[in-house]
Amino acid sequence: MNNPYTDAIQSEEDYHQQAEHLGATREHADRLLRQALADAREAPDTNPYELAYLQLVADMNQNPK
Image: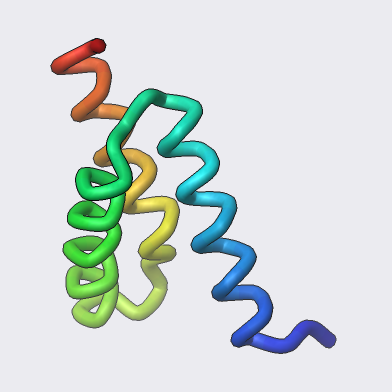
């Protein structure tokens, strides 16, 4: 069984690596993650990292670098 804290840290590291790969700034990625974490509190079955990543992809496709 995995430790939920270790899993959360790994998820955050993975999210930031994916954001960097997309060319997003750390600040942009952090802002979307904070919003996704707040949104996920209202929908407990929602994965905040997945939600933040999907929004990040949409943002980067809308404003490519």
